[in-house]
Image 1 (cartoon, rainbow, N blue to C red):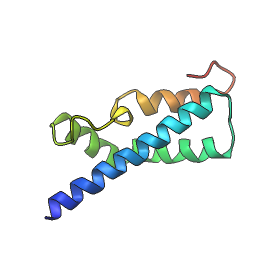
Image 2: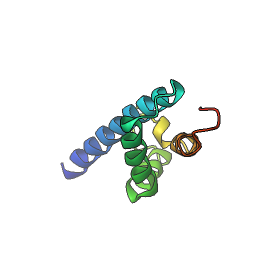
Image 3: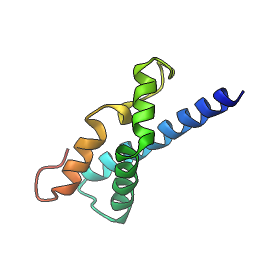
Image 4: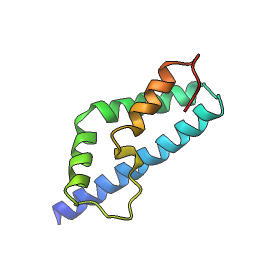
Length: 94
């Protein structure tokens, strides 16, 4: 039961970060560099550079996550590309 509850929490976390990534990309593409984008970029960076992203990534690679789960946030370039574009406001956005 504990593993099932843990997996559910993991899936909900991935969904939450997926929503954040989509929103951040939308804001960036529209040129809306505001406090909300700052917040999203900070949270995504903390996730990407922390242990949870790597655990989620490895579990996905091992086939432990549902195949129909949207997992762009787990791509090796998804968050990185967003953060790179965010850090270079004078260059063309993603």
